[in-house]
Image (cartoon, rainbow, N blue to C red; front, side):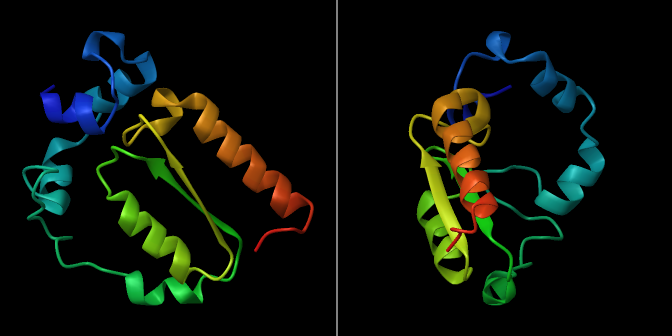
Length: 126
């Protein structure tokens, strides 16, 4: 794994990655991933490069949690824009976390997730 992964996917040395994450990478279908994403997360070029559903986000009618890490592969400002477009959305951006924020910053990730579920259960969602 290159430094991109330890900076933006899971922010710890690869030898400290949980077995579940390593298993996912071991079973990743590289041919399909590259065809869709392109050869690198740092510059998409696959079949999905122009696929954009942002204009449809307003049509999501269920409470939605947009959650990610400050160092995520998706720009947190873009995640905030997504949350702004979804009528009943909450946003949680976890500091010191990458794409796998549930491992990098458990307190923030699960706190945001549980808080969101409780809001929805109590009928308080946006």
